[in-house]
Image (cartoon, rainbow, N blue to C red; front, side):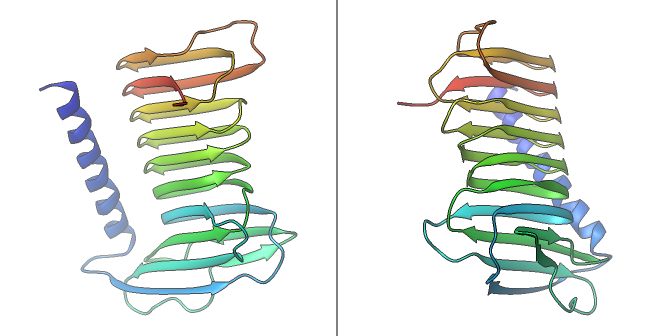
Length: 227
């Protein structure tokens, strides 16, 4: 079996693992589903989340009002009330209770700092001022980040891309890691205990900006952004 087939098989296995974990967290039998959404009228300067089961997608629509849409999967009765709040300028996203998984789609008007953890599920950021995100089981895809990036998955692929040079740390215990950086000089540490390392930028030990990319079982790729 070639490397491409192995990568496809790994993605299929990861997707199945996430689906099974979500099913387990929402109880036995088929889950009920519901969706809702609302605008956020309070000022928001940062997004934070702690979601046991589900996922988070934060995206920028220039000048648009802040809004949230939720996709819920639950066993029994639909959870009542909001699973988010705004505190001190921070939009905080939480889980929706026992036997419930929630996927958030958050729209913000400009790139903001984003941080948090998803237990079972994915994290996707479409533009951010900075990112500090983790998953236990699930992939991470953060791109269009203008500041520092830290992205860690226990089981899942990690992909990062910055628009400006800065520090980036990307790691997966089981999964591939792909780091894309804009033109600059970088001090690079790239390693995979079981897997291939493809370093496509020079390692400059004296550089101020750092790239750390680590995989336990999986490949590591550090590549320049396309012009």
